[in-house]
Image (cartoon, rainbow, N blue to C red; front, side, top):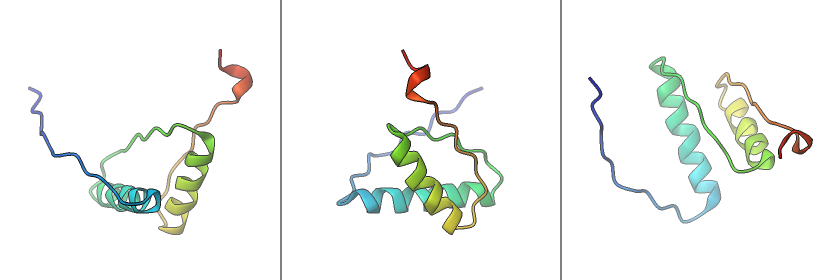
Length: 71
């Protein structure tokens, strides 16, 4: 059985605030052993998030594609 949890939207004043909150949420999920799959809209965002996760000592993998492979 699937149980859906409905939560309110969260609006952040800055992009840095949004990514900081994202890293905190990932850290909490990591501590409880929950896997996380996160998508970004650009390779730059993926790399910036990866840097923040590394600084927070959260193990992760970044999966990016080359623009040559996207059609």
